[in-house]
Each structure stands twice: as structure tokens, then as C-alpha cells.
Figure 1 (tube, helix red, strand yellow):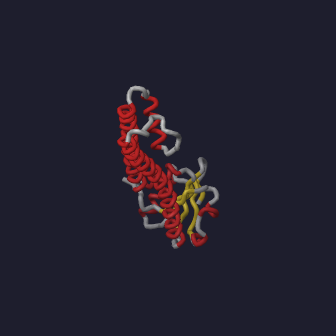
Figure 2 (cartoon, one colour; figure 1 turned 90 degrees about the vertical axis):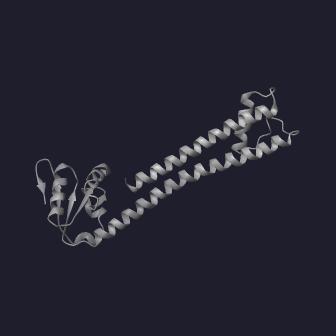
Figure 3 (spheres, helix red, strand yellow; figure 1 turned 45 degrees about the vertical axis):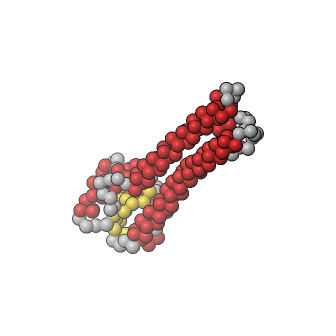
Length: 199
């Protein structure tokens, strides 16, 4: 399994568990306030009391706890659990976004450094059916090549079979703008058209 898939799975599980805990806190708070406040408060009042406690909105108490020390202690517990859970959920999502951006930038930089060190290599523009065969043939004969394609799905499909392949995600018709300057020490380009192949 790819690192990105493992990260996504971990974040999904963390978010799912924290969501379940938050739902449990809301249910517990609603039932608790209904028991503490008595039948004069509706279930909606108790739910709203729980919501403003967890969300730290700061509105006045819907359920009167002025004469209930136990009710105030219950509110402290609900606030602690609810706010903690919300904070964890937000931090998990934020970390996932930042981690994805950082990892992508790091992978791209490392790939560009490897490509910049290449000499006497080929650049395969586009990695469709024909160029996939060409890139594979170059690899089998010990000749380095870099694949360039604007379609990330095409690149990922090829990498699933050739994980060590050097690649760049970019416009295959403008390789000079997406390849590192040092990669100009190349043997040639290969670009496939429907009517002809250009090398």
C-alpha cells in the first residue's frame, strides 16, 4: 500500500473515531441535562444546551444550573470532552492537508534532483499505451528515461508497474519548462502522435 493511501486510511479512522466520540458526547449531554433540569425542559432545550457548551458559543444557560452544583460539574465534563474532541478533529484534518502538501513538495524536489543528475537519457512525452511500451523497453535495455505527462492517472498507472521510474507531472508538449535545467544532457525526446512517432 502506498504511503498516501496509508495516511488517508489513518486520517479516516481518526476522524471516524473522533466523530463517534463527539456524537456520544452530544447524546450524553442531552440526556444528562434532561435528567438534571427536569421535565420542564424539552429535549431540544437540552440538546441546544449541550451544543452551546461544546461549541463554546457563550450564550446564557438554557437549562438553569444556578442551584445545581452537580449540573455545573456535569457541564465542565461535557465541555472538556466536547472541546477536546473538536480540537482533535480539526488538528487531524489540518495535519492531513499540510502533510499532503509537504510530502508532495518533497517528492517532487527529490525527483527533480535525480533527474538533474541524469546523462544520456531519454524523455518520453506522454505515457499512453505506445509510450508505456517504449519506456519499458528503454528500462529493460538499461537506458534511463524520464516520463512526462499532464495526466496524473497515467503516471500513477505506469508507476504501479514500474515504481522506480523517474517522472514529472507536467505538460508533455513543453518539457523545457517542467524539466530541471541540468537535465538538458539528454539523448533525445520521444513523443507519440496518432500518425507518427517523433524521436
